[in-house]
Image (cartoon, rainbow, N blue to C red; front, side):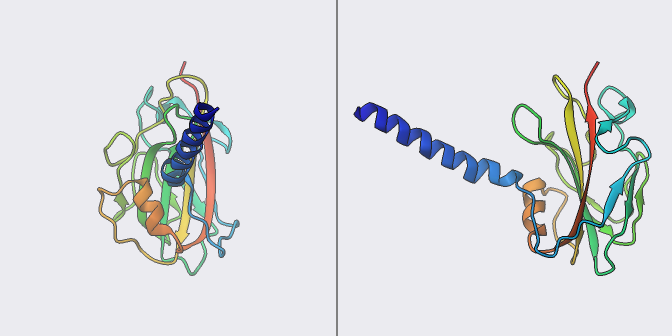
Length: 183
C-alpha cells in the first residue's frame, strides 16, 4: 500500500511540474483589454484550410503573404507568432516577429517589413521555417498581437521570452490557421 501511495505522489508531482514549467510556456498572453475585431488573413489560403506546398519545407519554404486589418488606433506595434501545437514533442515554433509598425497592413510573401525583429524558432534560427510535419495533418497558427508598446528584445529571444515581454501589453489579437500534411 505504501508503494502505491508513493507512486501516486510521484505522478502528481511530475504532472504538476510538467504543467507549471513546460505547458505554461505554451499559454498565450491574454489581456482584459483584448479585442476580437482585429483580423489576419492571407490570399494564399483560407482560415482552417490547406496551406500551399510553396510555403512549406516541401516547397520554397517562404512565408505566405499576411494581411492585417482593423488594427486598434492606440497600437504602438504588432507581434506575430506562428506555431504548430500538433507537433509530437510539444508546440513547435515556426516564426516569431515583433516591433512590426502598427501601420503595417500586409507582410508580403517571402519578406518581412523594415525594422522588425525576428526571433528564434524551434530550429534555433531566426526567420521563417515552414510547415514540415512528420506525419498527419498539422495546424499552423499565425497569431497577431496589437501591443501598446514596442519591445526591447534581441533577435536571440525565443517565443517564451516574447510571450513574457508581451504580457500586460496586448490590446487586441487575431488568429489565422493553416493546415498542412506532407504527401
